[in-house]
Image (tube, rainbow, N blue to C red; front, side, top):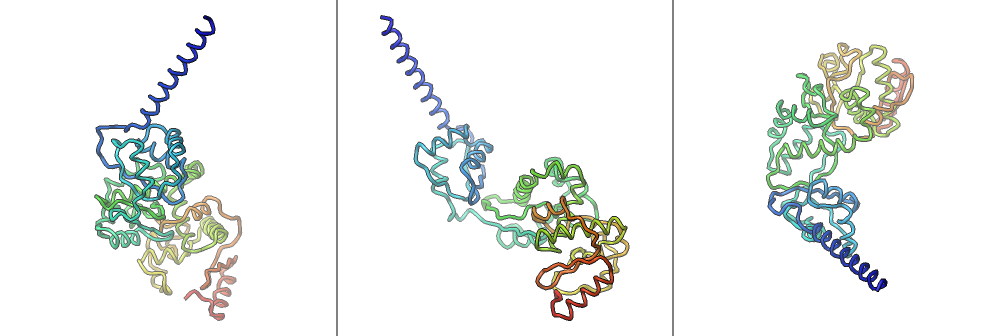
Amino acid sequence: MKKTRILALIIGFLGLLLILLFIYYQYNLSPVDKKSNADIEVVIPEGMSTNNIAKTLHDKNLIKDELFFKVYLKLNNVSSLKASTYLLKKNMNLEEIVKILEKGNKDSADVIKLTFKEGETISDYATNIEKNTSISKDEFINVANDKDFLNELISKYWFLSTDILNANIYYPLEGYLSPDTYEFSKTNLTSQKIITTLLDEEEKKLQPYKTALEQTNIHSIITLASMAELEGVKDEDRKMIISVFYNRLNKGMNLGSDVTTYYAFNEKMDGDLTSEMFNTYNPYNTRSSEMAGKLPVGPICNPSISSIEAALNPSTSDYLYFVADKNRNVYFTKSATEHEAKVKELKENGDWIW
């Protein structure tokens, strides 16, 4: 009788466990919100791991449990989820979501891919957007410069400060819109959506440097990074370029960076600048003597993370000058005499950038 009772208890326990597992399974299969029919955009980039896909879906409140999602994929032999941009709904069950991700929608006419390159300006971004979407360049720039919108963004993103609201800044978000390739749904695409998506990506990329950035002036770091982005190509050159900038600032010298002059006067970087430009005051133009000991008022492009790293961790040197040749090799010197001799040498050897 005792053995029979124990066996019955075991069977009862196993039965209860199976019922609980069934309930758990059905619960996690079911939609997060059966009443919600709103589209939720989910971007799955190339190379995203299953763990990150699960986290993304959970963060978007489209699945109930990340671990269950991964177990479900294994139980159903789902080996590949396609990179793309999806419009999913909370009223979809897990099976529906997985089937959509498994099939992908790369060829969907509703999906558009936009690539923003490191070193490009917001004006470049806006031109790209106008070329590939129904949003005009002027519309995008107007939204990006809207004071109310900017104040909302400042309150949302830790790396944005009121420094960007300086009246002398051409584009307040210059320097902060992460260069990368993005996929968007064409349906109801807005400038605000593009901007917040790029800022979300910037936040992810800056997160590892948050402590270091918050211990300094973030706007100054992004400004220096944007200059180094355009002045150098190699990481080690950019770190040395930043050290030159700091050395000149410490001596109360103007930074003498041509790339800031091009930006100040909206000139393409495809020819020599004029002495008139060099001598004209502009809060971006660090060739002007009136900018002695000062940074430009703001970033002059949207820099890479490697340039931001260079601005946070520059080399140590006593160089005060640098010049690049046509192959983007950078030469550093300690005095004006050495610098002028190097420029003369590059011109005589046919290595001058222009």
